[in-house]
Image (spheres, rainbow, N blue to C red):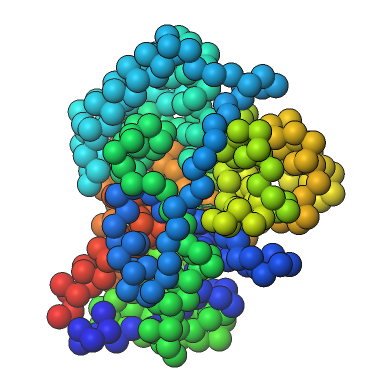
Length: 418
Ligand SMILES: Cc1cc2nc3c(=O)[nH]c(=O)nc-3n(C[C@H](O)[C@H](O)[C@H](O)COP(=O)(O)OP(=O)(O)OC[C@H]3O[C@@H](n4cnc5c(N)ncnc54)[C@H](O)[C@@H]3O)c2cc1C
């Protein structure tokens, strides 16, 4: 809102900006993304922002064949599988097209769709095991929870918000390729922070928000600031630890109870070459334990595999000592790509469930949340406006969604104050 007649202060709990967008350097200086990395088809806001900040985008490596594994077996889709896959996608996309992104609770059959899980729908509508695997693994990755824990309504909302099932499964040849930022995605928040300069206060965790008829006061251990309006863009479970005076409306508080976050390890393994390409593999694999992608430098001078582990598997692995966990993960990669995968030059893992100011990767709306409490998701609570990717209608759970939600909340405040 700077330059539009409003002044702003940004309070950030951590000692860095970016939240779930965080890039670090490997020993060789290569930047990797511990959190958000890729940008997908249709995400125009983030592309525009990157262009404005002069941050270069690159397409992901796309050579060789992907792999799909069910348990210990590599599988491939035969013509009957493909026929069923496309039929089910058409059906799901037709259902998703009926979900009102602004008001999913108003969708015809919303209550019935919310009472059923996406996993249960797949079980009854998909007869071929390979096709069920093809749905289950990526969607468990997206929602960070077994598909039995995702209500059908939320899965349909999520898919429509992210371009539809066909696009999300990478089966729409017409859409632009997935891209990433050379040098790491955190360049975006760092570039924005430069513009805000001293208006950003790091290590300023907000603990209490007090509203009165004249304004709103935001407090932390070492500060107390007053203003006309506040935009809160904190992950839902973290929000529950803040004190609000007066209390949030019951429907907003109840909604927060039903927005848990899931989390899976994100693992980077660096090799001296993308050796899997010699065997004809693309480095992309869907397996019960997680998803892998080739994130090697464009010139192929080194090989970098990025693995996103399934949430339930991750929570089991989190109980192991670090070296035992690393051995277990490398063993899984060895199964997909052969013995060379067991010997990375460098191994780096991140687990957002342990992050005090994130609480996980992404929040979902559990059963009953959309239908009973959905209208309170973006409804301002007095002088408090809500942002964050979990309030987005487009590209929910992605960086693009975070930007969309921020623009919407900023427009709400501007409408009140200008
Ligand atoms: C492993 C992983 C992989 C991902 N991959 C992708 C991807 O490839 N592409 C993609 O688009 N998205 C991806 N995402 C999702 C993406 O990171 C998020 O959608 C996006 O960053 C959310 O932005 P946000 O601003 O809503 O929330 P956040 O990034 O969580 O920002 C919230 C901010 O609030 C701060 N905060 C919390 N509590 C307080 C407090 N009390 N006081 C002050 N500040 C506070 C936090 O420190 C944080 O900076 C991924 C996420 C993870 C974890």
